[in-house]
Length: 96
Length: 148
Image (tube, rainbow over all chains, first blue to last red; front, side, top):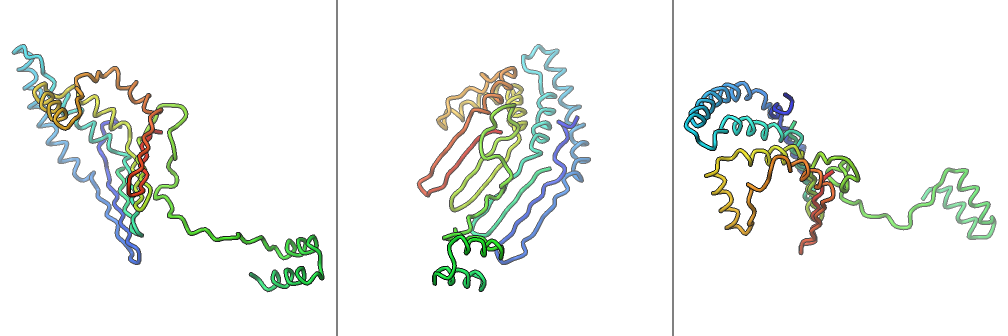
């Protein structure tokens, strides 16, 4: 289940030399209820499409799996970290 | 340099004390030899706690991209992303896959994504442990890609 848990927070920190910098904490988990509603609707559509394709004898009937794996791809982005330094400026991006 | 240290070194220079005595006195005041040159403060890596090279054993968990030079960029990407992406390629509809392959071919990458089988993915991930890419750009930037 954890493998399908999408990123919960994106933490962006920007620090310029001589300034205090700023930090943005994006609570993505607030968007996920909306995403899950859309996902449920998409899954209904893809299940019907796959069933029709399967009964019609089509070779490809994996749209449901495609949607689920796409969610997995989104979830796999958790743990990505980017650190950049340039002439005293620092930018950190962390996906949790 | 502290006054005590100066005085001891002055006595040594004047021959009032021997080198061993000076050493003892310096030890007693807790003086430590100063480095001959002060190295300029190196720009610390933005992620000093990350591995500096490929892991010797085990399945790698992350892919690291490190750029050092004028700019310093460190990127840590979970290999789960690669694993999931490769698995996703086997589910892409055939028409879309043909378009992807032709676009890649036009860009000079004659690589058929259909050839990646789900059962080979773990082997691909495992073999990434031995992969290391080192690039030195004309601007003097070093780019390293490895998995650990």
